[in-house]
Image 1 (cartoon, helix red, strand yellow):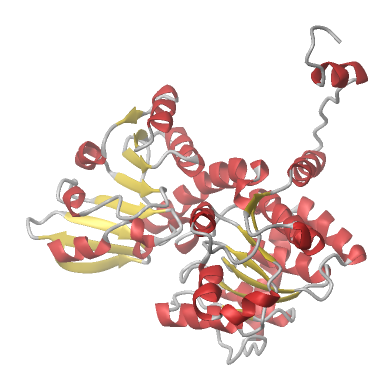
Image 2 (cartoon, one colour):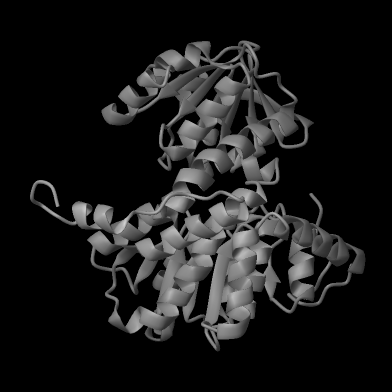
Length: 424
C-alpha cells in the first residue's frame, strides 16, 4: 500500500503528491457545480464562522471539495478517514497543503485508524460530520466532557443513521444530528446511481471479470442494492436478489429479478455483493455451497457483513493474485475470492462515487451544517431529516446546472392542492 509521506497533518514532505491531489480535486470540483455555488455563498455569508468541525469521512476528491466549502464558510476543520482503505493519499496530502489537518493513510491498520479519530477529537470539535458514526460513538464512549461544547452533527450514510437512531431509542444520543443520508437528493441518487456504478467499477478494476452472462447476487435491496442490480443487469448479468424484507423482495421480483434465500443463491452465484448494513449475511454455510471461483465482496459500510473469519477457518491457504483480491483455497480444492478485505469495494478498489452524484450529497452536507450552526439551540437530541427546503434547493440547483427547466404551479393549482373540498 502507498504511504503518505508526512510526519503530522499539515506537514507534507512529498510536494509532488500534494500537487497531484490538487489537480484531481479541481477535476472533481468541475463536476460539482451545486457545491461550488454553495461554496461561493459561504465565502460571503460565513455561516460557520468559528465553528470547529470534526469530520470522519472517506478522504476522496469529492470530500476535499466539501472541506474547502466548509472552510470557505468560516469553519475550522480536522478530518480523518471513515474507512482504512478508502483514502486517496494524494488528496490527503493536498488537504494538508490547503491548511486542513487531515489524518488518513490508505491501508492503515485498525490501531492507526482509531488513533486518527483521536487526533480529530483532540481538536475539540463542536460539530461532528460522520460517515458511519465512528466519530460520534468514540466521543460518546471515551470523551464525554467534550459533549458539553458539541452543538450537533451530520451523518452521511445509512449504517450511521441506523446506529444514531438506536442511540436515540436508548435515550443516549448526545446532541442533535441531521441524517444527511435521508435527503431524497442524497439516498435516491448517491446510493442508487453512485453505489450502483462505483461498486461494479471496483469489482471490475479488482478482477477484470466479465459480468455479462454471469450470475450476480445482490444481498439487500435498499437503494444501494437497487442501483447495483440495475447496473449489473445493464451489463448483461443475471441478477439474483436476497432479502429479508417482504416489501423489498416483492419490489425486486416486480423489477424483473430472481429472489431467493442466500442458501439457494450461494449455489448458483458467480459474484456476490452485500449491501445490507447488517452482520454476517454471508457465513460459513454459504461459503461451503459456493462454486469454484466465486467472487465475494461488500459495498456496505462495515466489512462484518461478510464472516471472513469463517472463510479463513475452512480454507487451507490464501494467495493474493491481484491487488485487492484474496483467493482462499478450500480443502476440496475450490477457490473463493474476496475483494478488499471485505471493505467497501467501490472505494477500496475503485474511486468511489462519481463527483456529479456526490455534488448533491455534499451540498446537503454543507447546508445541513450551516442549518445546525444557526438553529441548534432550538433542536432536541434527536435524529432529524434534512429540512425539505434544503433538499428542494439542492434539486433545483442541480437541475439548473444541467440546463433543465421544470413547470411551476399556477395560483389556481396551489389553491386546489391546499383545499379539502371538491373543486376550488
